[in-house]
Length: 230
Ligand SMILES: C[S@@+](CC[C@H](N)C(=O)[O-])C[C@H]1O[C@@H](n2cnc3c(N)ncnc32)[C@H](O)[C@@H]1O
Image 1 (cartoon, protein in one colour):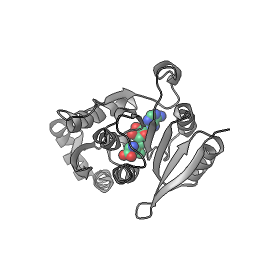
Image 2 (cartoon, rainbow, N blue to C red):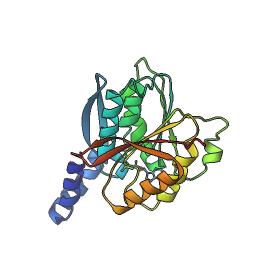
Image 3 (cartoon, rainbow, N blue to C red):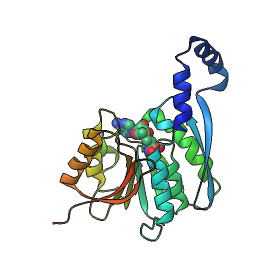
Image 4 (cartoon, rainbow, N blue to C red):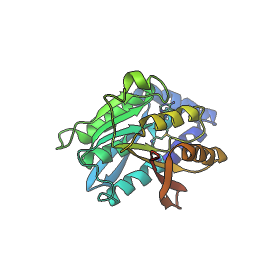
């Protein structure tokens, strides 16, 4: 999926192709591709978009989906409260729904339309808890929008939320905010830059971090993060 996006972006270097893409724009809208995945015996069709980082499926989402499917006994999501941060296209949240969780999928406002579309398309008319899609901008309004007196999550899911962006401090604060006693944060990320390892180190200074799995073919590491017991 990412390759197709790169292809479109690189094509825009050519003025001729750019003209063709522009003339397409009003008719094809900004959605350009659908990808199909199978997890837990369900076919999941994901609509992707060329408009935003969160609108394509990243390798961390594939790793986390595969891990949740293969480790259902160790991490049983049935009837558990699950929050996904930076949910993007919603693949991981959909897998969590299929596994029986009460899911809240969150992301930036501009991503929510495509996220809601994918989640409702893949979960409607199915015998599962109805998922919720909400805005959650890292570090913003958490006490107001997700007060801890009301919201306690069994699992926080996050895939490829650490990449080259300016919100890493806010992301760290968000992970720490939601990671309370009894909560397991499952974070899958492709490790590319020094900043990724620095983020892991900072997280490890505050919470318990443990590598659960590595996916060498995609450089993804999957970590279990929990609160430190004194
Ligand atoms: C690299 S994408 C990964 C998407 C998806 N989790 C996946 O693995 O396919 C990063 C996601 O984080 C979201 N994001 C980036 N900055 C954010 C912020 N400040 N607050 C909330 N979400 C943010 C993006 O919108 C995007 O959906």
